Image (cartoon, rainbow, N blue to C red):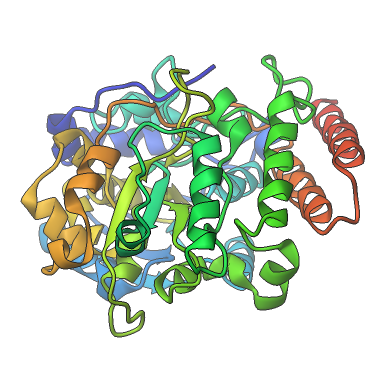
Length: 454
């Protein structure tokens, strides 16, 4: 099982200018993926250099919350590289818009993929440069191609660089917790989570919590969809059943929303709205929640937010945090300024990272640096102590254990993820039993793997 224990060198991260010339020479050999990862086409001729070019960058974060400041700082350091940042909304429509643009003639040099499904799909469709060799020769990025992976690999190759350290944790309405006399420890279990969700529901919330801990990811790690050798799906594992049973039980006792309500109200992409308006008291999330909590103009509320680590399966058992190093940045396989794009990617990951922290992003090197007043102010804003229990955040976010999940097997990943999501929704809608759903998931996922491996 792959986990995420590693050490990142801040010196390497800040040495963004090192190896630029070497990187330029290697880029000519770094093209779209071949084999099962896409086509064997050659990349376009590089019209620029590591310090010269014109880049179009697509990302899902609003420019005014940090990306534009980063772009301005980058162009100040590299005045001969012009950068245009375009925001796309990371929803179903926005994802399709980016995919269509990448496949068509829209000039895009660098783009962000938010989630393993998008990273894998775009990489296997030959829409991203293979960065494996570049990373091996770069002080900044070589940590991502070490023997034990720490970020997503696609068919054993590196097509993306993670720009955030994103553990999952529990976000809680502290005022409601204290008013109800609910005590939540920093070392707790999935059963504790269920019980506390019930207590919040009894205290007057519509439901106690938004989502359910991911038993299979906690117990098995990032590759939980697969058996150890990757040749079969693992969707009949007992932990898959445990999570489904816990989900239905929490629906039945009012601890979480029913699937009918989630679908009818379109809650999926807007869970923070329901947390901040007091509909429920806790949810599993990450640092992105800070962006909404501190925005009192759009999300008015009068309570303080506290944090707890992701619950483990059973007391004393080791476990994996389902969060990942994410917000992956990729270089388009069609970029005509790949050398300049590589320079930009390293700047975003390294010295420019702190400029996007106000948008709820904390980079791997910021995590390695540990807690600081400057990080808290950037992440939480000037009123940090009024809106957030900062001490609980530091105790939660900077904990050395558990390690983050790492996904190193991606065979038919997009197909399997879709199969799992669809059938789990049918189970929650009670149109399919858990037994029948698991059997169908297993069969369809195995067929997808077999087809991919043929």
